[in-house]
Length: 584
Image (tube, rainbow, N blue to C red):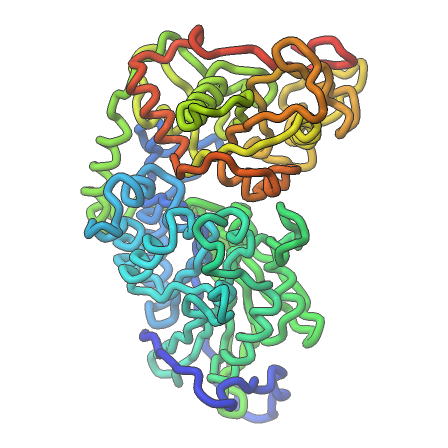
């Protein structure tokens, strides 16, 4: 198996071959073969089956395992069963962010400063990936770190629709054609087109604005699939970091976020789409292409290395060319195999370093603080985030005369500050995203609208319905991280009322807030850049943006104080009500 690097030269390279196979001819049976494409997605920095926040092996209520070491064992098994020359291995993105392991080698000992090879590059190189596609989280740590990781990868890293802002030319390799030298058969060419998520333009605006644009997935595929076919690909697979529901978590200013099924439906010449981003398990799904009427295979392998997608393509020789005559896919559970000792050994030094880092004691907690009820109650542990954000902004703007408020969301219901020693992993488990702190200027009227938007998170509760906290939240599939709580003002959320009419008793220092009164609001960069679609914040005046990482600010504040005591910062300033009566 080898990569055939092909330059695009001349008009001929841009011509598509006919996409409809000629009818089978009568006579002797056609030469046939089955080849297998394996796929992962949304690995998110999980190399081993390890939970760095709990400092123990990973486990969840469904019995899932995680990590590339588990994936590797399944890959080895498939290669042994099918023959390595009959297999390829692809990934659909979100690889280098998501765990303390990934954070450590981006921020504590960054690979850009003459540091070691990134652990995800080490593991993927050892496993033998054939192509990897960029996810939106690849851009979290900036373009220089991304460029270093790409250089460290042996597999080509793809992103056809990430283009230079000024020229519109691809900033990354759009596709690759893999030539499979199957023993006893004529070579088979498998083209793989990588597409990333347009939301990068919002979510990592600070890293990409003025440098990169992210074009529509369907339009990009329509440009490149004919090129891949024209260069002789017998099979075309799209690896897309986009879900399949045709919807977006942002407005209509950018191309559709979750466009994988649309690509399959609207772009002729694609045999299969290996997709990610949504963190769902889709073993096998078929979409009919509107132009050719052919069935396009789609599959998504969950997240974190919990599953491996296995796509089988049956090919027959017709008129001297390989033609796909059948295809199917399945997802394999990585909890059925042990970790590959080779990958465990490859990652051990960096894993051990990370374990040492996350177990550093940074402070003492006066009592046990849990985030379990944070989605529906005002909890001290989220007040700690609010307090640190407010104090950081106040100290950075000593001449400011406006009141400083703060927003925070319940990122993790399982986060706990145990009584006694607080370690880095406890803080990291509370604030699991690599966001930076900003502050914007908002008026009282805008804050009211912001809170109404946030309160859509709750399902409407009828007068006599029992209060079931398992059914109270996540209305319209709104994730916990898109439910913002505001500190510095007091308010009620009446869940008996319809969305848009829920905020009551909104006050500042005991008085109703005038519509034109101005505030500074501490906010994270994801929200300020438009993540979640909250009103007003993207157009608001930015008054603070020192690129301070919120998680690091939480750690440093705890270290400086020595003790985390709710009596120093906890303020019960919001509550849920039903027709004005407290819900709890």
